[in-house]
Amino acid sequence: MPSSIDDLPPLRDIIDRYGLRAQKSLGQNFLLDLNLTSKIVRQAGPLEGMHVLEVGPGPGGLTRAILAAGAEKLIVVERDERCIPALEEISSHYPGRLEIIVGDALTRPYAGLVSGERIRIISNLPYNVATPLLTDWLLTIPWPGWIASMTLMFQREVAERICAKPNSKAYGRLSILSQWRTLPAIAMEVGPRAFTPPPKVTSSVVQFEPIKPLPCQASRLEEVTKAAFGQRRKMLRASLKSLAAGGDTGSLLERARIDGERRAESLTVEEFVALANSVREQAE
Ligand code: SAM
Image (cartoon, rainbow, N blue to C red; front, top):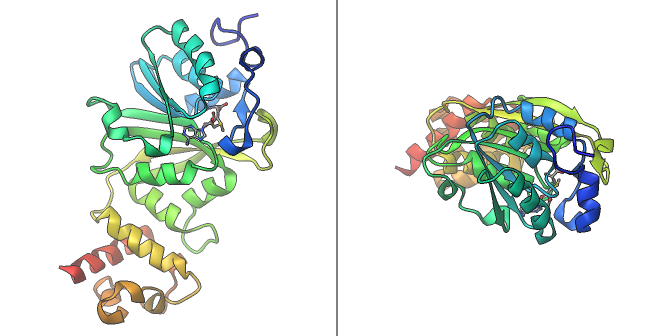
């Protein structure tokens, strides 16, 4: 029986046919309901005529929904070679629209994948590489460069860190980097039972819309957030010591107009940007 969104066989049949037993080491929790994958894909906005990147297509649940939604071109990066025949079957169904790259998504030079096109990234990310991949994309230079938007599924706890506001437990480096360059919002939640096998935790889809960020060097912002949140219980005048010339955090904080008795979790994104610029000025 053909599936609800295309004439390809149901995902369960594909998984049986190609022996795609999920492997924990690869963060494999598959989505087999094509109505659900279509709903996730809709969060990304219109795909007609768009180019899309998907990391970790697995047996192809999201892949099929992205192509059925009209993406002109979809590039997928999958590490598990067992999934390639299943993806090739999808490729034959949508001739010339699916490009399959076999390899580790962490080592791809993404900017070179595309020729002048802006791309929507849509992925149910493997949990073990989700944060490094997101950080890498968020630090793309120039911003937003090749990225049109990102629609990414994470464990709920990671999604909450991305969207967290100051003075909350979840607020940290990931919140600052995400909110410096994008407007992130939790678009939908997906319970464990939607996956095969079910993970222990709930997942959330986060929609990231790129914004014009406040001017600041990404590397400086990374440096400052790392130092400040590395010792988040300490006052900034102590936690930022490693960044201040001669360990004197006074002038560093003064230039940024920030009280040294405050702690990292109380600073807004704008204040972190001011601190990063103060570190840069000090080095000049
Ligand atoms: N997109 C599919 C879905 O939603 O059903 C599968 C998602 S599953 C959570 C993550 C996928 O990422 C798996 O197919 C896994 O093999 C792949 N993967 C894991 N680590 C990877 C890496 N470093 N590079 C590329 N793909 C990876």
